[in-house]
Image (cartoon, rainbow, N blue to C red; front, side, top):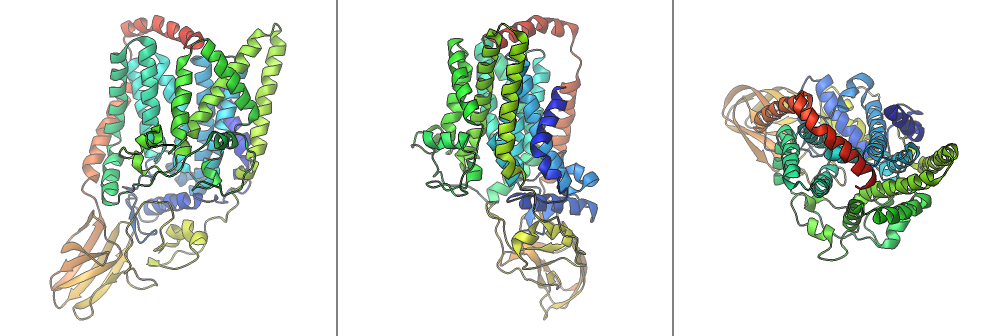
Length: 574
């Protein structure tokens, strides 16, 4: 029932996505549609594993792109429903996952009433953070929905190995969903929760053991993503400045403003990066809940609220938490500190639920308590749905193009924003890079128009035949002398040739060939692909073994008492 109710809640807020089933999304969704289409076309039309995207930016990697979602289970729904509907199902699934996780955590760990747990689930999964991510195309941020599940498994206390493996599996899922922000944030989140676990159980070694399993699962199973991403970021560093900072007034506006101008005075980002609406009622209830949990000495809630709120403030000083964090590798490429607001809203929803729970428990009439609890939860739900409706109704952009695909791939100079998402299915490319993406180098020598995509110097010979697929060039050339062939795409490491020597010319992929007739194949096949895939494959087998192993009766017995004790402690003294 928890999961069905959560799915119903998600549908209640996001049904406008399906009014025009093939309508595409606003803002960054065009980039996500493009990325999914590039991978979908590679598999369905050309029978190739999606490693390279020739349709964007003059040619860029899919394999090493941190935002790639090819390995996400959601992507494969594209072969059943098409990419656009698959993306919408992904949104719906994550919102439902967030609601179910928060409800389950609130009920199981804290022992709150169902009405209070429902309030927490509604307030968090329907908050402005998820709304703007799902409305504006931050598909790689949807994995924040796993936060309550990570916390639940860390504190569950029944089978440490399986629970640690479950945490590692969720972190792995975050990685393959392109979680450019969620995964680094989750490292902090899980480290904090493991410290809470160690303090509550007075067992630091146990938490270290838990962390070793969880992060080990992530590292080994995630090799297929970590290794290519490492090489991509090494070749194209993406450090960004740390300029933004928030005041308490800004935070109040973020949490309570039902509408706001697109530009935010005094800040470098648009409102979509700040909108975190939960409403005045939830904020006030959370403040009451904070006073209650402090009285009951649930210090971990105060510590978590303080930690993640301070990180959200951004660059408020050289020694501010976010400023210090921004000096670390990976975190130095994250440019928007306000994205930590997702964790602030998590704690606000949880604290508001504590306040409602205490109020309902003090009522002497159970039916009245239930009625009031339901009214509060429904009222907050209606407020969030109405307030978010301008964003949930943004799925009105044009469907992907139904034009016939070009017989031969080539670059064009169409209206970029109108055509970008449809380029892969049209077999067309663009030299333009989407703003805010990776720092991919783009050759200035790329050429436009329906002409051969391989250039053979006229004085050296002739191109007799050529073909290209997303990952591969096939060609037959006849050369009178040694020559350098140029391919109409960016140079990049990872390309190999059946003959000749790969090089580059003015930023273009190039190939040096001796005189003679050559049937050649040039394909994108990075050397790190096979070994990293092998490591991940072995890791996944190990993860399955950890998750589905049978517990011995001794282990089950040892943990029965601990589970009951943890439940009571979590419900009343955590």
